[in-house]
Length: 294
Image (cartoon, rainbow, N blue to C red; front, side, top):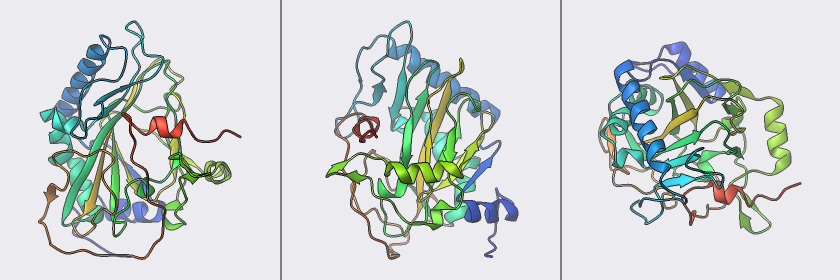
């Protein structure tokens, strides 16, 4: 087993990640930064109450703030903020300058660059769920030293729509997200059933981060509780992993080196996938809504 000059993780945590494909680490941001993240997001929820459809603009002219169809002033259902690091210094700090960044560096460093960020929110009473998929087939790179960091802005419990993962699936095949000629952003239903049969649930207190390998199978159910579940999600790669398709969430910080240095090198590993289809709305939730029902 490889040993690194680890700063934020123990050797056991490092080994667990590469065995299972995921790892939950507490205190990934300071209490002060966590409080600022929560305050900022609550402000965006309050702002959303004045809107009836997705709003704001990202660099690719898509809405920055995505709303569920059930969204109402008296019962807001803000489900996605695209590229929050572009509009919030607090979220930028968490992405680039926190212990979360150090944890990612321990796993795929020393040279690490940023790809994209988003907030996935499940407010109480909302219907948002995430069908099973692998991130790599949305954002393929020349190699798979790519990590998704899911920072828990709220406590994540059994009841509020926690992330479900299939341990060890990052060492398995890459599954298609195309069905009957349509890109649905979800794996075949039987593949999802098989994954859930051996799944684990990622729970944690606010300020924890779930570090997830890009090839890990995962999904989540709707929030059935009275408490919000907010995840700030950042995707990072080794500096020698070059994207093979356009970024589904382009942003002005794409390619930013958050640790180490740019190497001007490309490393490739063999794999074969069907390239993803870019969303033409605020988020991939609309693509997953087209997944065939059985």
